[in-house]
Length: 189
Image (cartoon, rainbow, N blue to C red):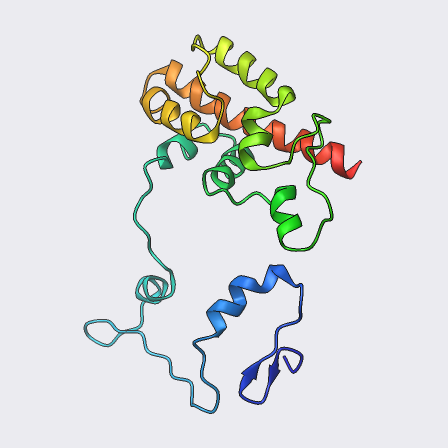
């Protein structure tokens, strides 16, 4: 703790990008004050539910939640798709902007910069994967290959109880997962 706290100031190490969320959360912490804990509930009794509700941050449900989280989904595929919807994958362009990498070229050898849109939809390698997934799901190929059009397509054609729509959700999640996995295989092996 003494490395990041000096007196009443935070002193975060330079180039430790993993700590950026912690750093911003700690900016509201005041030193020199006594800590207090309070779980409010009618009747004064402690409850785990009240404690959890006060700790977690709640956000509105996103329109794409049912595309990502559905019965029968493969959890690691859903998680990877969730990261993609949130644009949270650490693609090479992000790592370069943080000063971690020197170059941000696509690992599939197409000569373009690796971004979320490029990696999953514009690269020739992944476009071939998407073409096959769309063909197997009896879907026409999109006019524009990018994340925005894919999200729009998924919201209109992949939500529902019919088996065909379930297959589209599963296909979307599997394609994103396996494209990301192949990307990592090419970089780290």
